[in-house]
Image 1 (cartoon, rainbow, N blue to C red):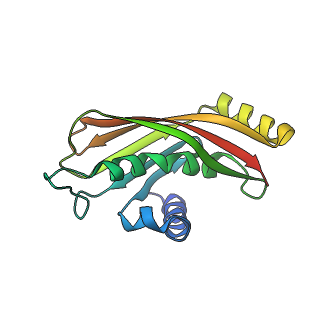
Image 2 (image 1 turned 120 degrees about the horizontal axis):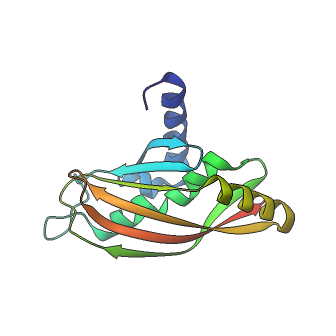
Length: 152
C-alpha cells in the first residue's frame, strides 16, 4: 500500500492491534495490507525460531488466526458488531526459514450475508481460509477458521 490514506489505515490497525492483542504484536505480527474483504499480515523469523532453526509453529498459527478479526474490521461496522474465532485448524506444509506472510479474503456475497444475518439474529458465522507463505512464496501453512460476527 502506498498512498497516505492506506498508510494511515495500516498505522491505525497496527496500533490498535498492539493494544487489543499484545501477545501477537509481541511476536512481530503486523498488518501489511488491508482493503474491504482482504487482509494480509506478516511475522519475522527473527525472534520466532524454534529449537531446530525454523519458525515456531505457534507463530504460523497466530499470523493466520488474526486475519478473521482484521477482515471483520475491513467489512463490518465496528460500532454495531464484533468478531471472534470459534474454531481453527492448521496444516503445516513446509518449514518456514524466513519471514512469513498470511493472507485471506471474504467475498462481497459473504460480507452481505454475514452482515444481514448478524443484524437479524445477533450473530453469523463466516469461514476464513488463509495461506501462509515464506519469503520465496512457498506455502508453509494453510488454515481454516470458523469465525463469528456478533451484534453488540
